[in-house]
Length: 409
Image 1 (cartoon, rainbow, N blue to C red):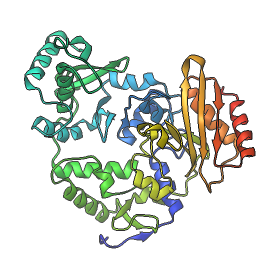
Image 2 (image 1 turned 90 degrees about the vertical axis):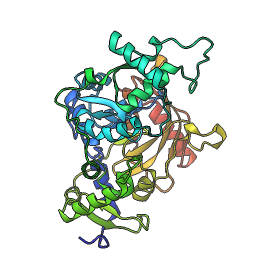
Image 3 (image 1 turned 60 degrees about the horizontal axis):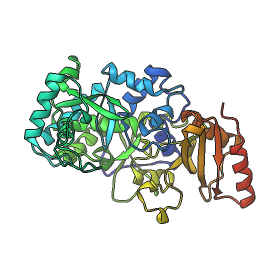
Image 4 (image 1 turned 135 degrees about the horizontal axis):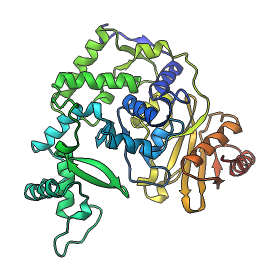
């Protein structure tokens, strides 16, 4: 197909394709338990790690949204079995070990002096490497700070900077976390022998990125394929890989008035042919870092949902709350819920349930089920809703009471 040719597509077909590609179309698309967790991670390509623990941490939330019965130890078992590893996707993430070689371009760029927030302290890096080689896996707290050093979020001691730089360059790997603090060991002692460690060529890397986008995004532009990738020449290589995929029938270029002009959009034709598959109508409260939400322009174009995580904004500028979770119902985003798990009280507190203007909410039972699932995910057995907006006051009060009195079990 010529790059300038495109097929017009219905927006609902695009939405269904994208929801299925993200692993949210069915109740258990990957199965259950550790095996289901592994298949979900393989399909998505990564799950983002985040330090915020207002509710279940991002990586656990993302997997629990797709794998019924998921427990955090399932992911930790994958790490322990060397079936997954921690590194960088567009942000800190857990990734399938089978994809390790495609982390090498970034590692090599940084090892060659590429710019990164981790400070380049070669003498300290050598000292840290020698210590781990001798003593085994260590955490930052196992290294003393210089006399007079005052710690802080970005005032790390030299050993902490060295550990992070060595990790980013691929000389160290994270073998686990203790209290969410990374435990590092030498890559040569962690990486399984069966893992392919041949650096991919730029063309190979581009083809892999396009294939991953086709599988896990379903609908995308070239910009989404190379999102947060810094390899020199990658933009041209991705364009070439897309053209080859189109010639081979693996991609189809599409158009729709909702899609931003001036950019080509592509879909997985196999997924598109199955776009009439049934979508689970349950309400899901998604992590703000869910793969479905990462590309905000894509989210707005396809779903008409303008989302911003407001925890990084000063409180007076927040419209919805500190940590609002997008609410997905089938192929529609019906609102957001600003939630906090009060774990000592086993209470899931929703400070603000903001329903989208113009969206007809699903029946109350589905909303109740969505909140109950979120409460169970956070080991809470009670729910309290303080405020509801987006519906008439009488309906808001009724909905708040219904959710707050709903059984969680």
